[in-house]
Image (tube, rainbow, N blue to C red; front, side, top):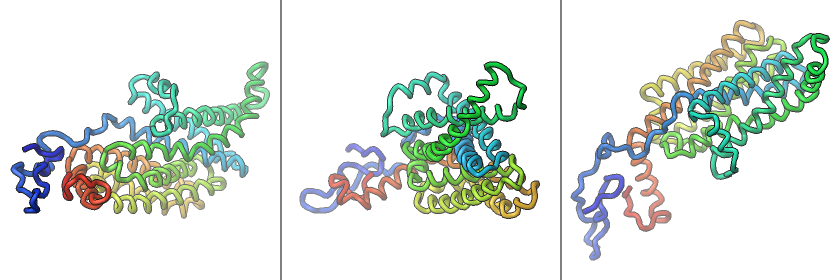
Length: 349
C-alpha cells in the first residue's frame, strides 16, 4: 500500500467496487509534530532584514504621502519632516533588502523583465519608480535649507533646478506611495507560508494602516503641533484601520492565526496592539502638548515595527508546523471536494 503525500491515509481508503464502504488503511496517521521528520512547507530563508525592510518601506511611503499633502496645504515643517523621513526610511529599507539579497546586482537583474503575475517583479518596478522621485523631493528640501547667496556658479543653478522640480517630484512620490506600502503584503501572502497566505485578503489593509500610523507618528515627532494636524489625523486613522483589520484578519485565518498569539510572535503582536492603542489615544491630546505628541509618535512607530516583526515570526513558525498546512488543506477539500476536487476522496489530503 502506498500512502498519500500528507500521510493521512492511503489510496485504498476509497469505496470498494461493490459499495462495501472504505477499506481500512494499514498506514497509521502521521503526527502533525513530526510529519515523518519533514516539514510540509519549507520555511522562508528570509532573515530579520525583511521585516525591517517591510517596516521602513511603510514609513517611507506614508511620509511621502504626508509630505505631498503638506506641500499643497502650506505646512513647510511637516513637508520637510515627511520628505527627509521618507528618504532616510527608504534608504534604510533598500540597505536591508540588498543585504538580504546578498548582492546589489540581484535587485538590478529584476529590472530586465516585467512579470505582472509576480509580486516581486512588480514590487521591484514600484520601488524603482518611487525611489528617485522621493530622493529628488528630499534633495530639494535640503537645498532649500541652504541660505540664499551661499552658492555660486553651477552649484547655484543646480539648487534652483532642485527647487523647481522638488514640488512635482514630491507629488509623484506621494501618488506612488500607497503601492509601496501595500505591495509587500501581496508579496508575503503570495507565498506558501500558511499564516501569510491565509491572510491575503486583509494583510494589505493591515500593512497600509500600519504604515499610516508609523508615518503619522513620525510627522508628530518632527513637526510642531501647529502644523502636525494632518499627521495626527493620518496616524489615528491608520491605527484604527490596523487594529480593526488585524482582528478581522485573525478571524478569517482560522487555525493559521494561532502562531500570531503564541511564543515570540504572540508577544510582539500583543506589544504592537498595546503600543498602537496608546499612540492612537495620545494623538487626541497631542495637539496641545509637544511632549505628548513625541511620546505618541514613538509609540505608533514602535507598534508598527512590532506588527511587521510579529507577522513575520508567525509566518515562519506556521511553516515549521505541518498542522497549519495539513488541517486547512483537508478542511478545504472536504468543503469544496465534490465540485472542485471530483477525483479526491472526501476527507483526504
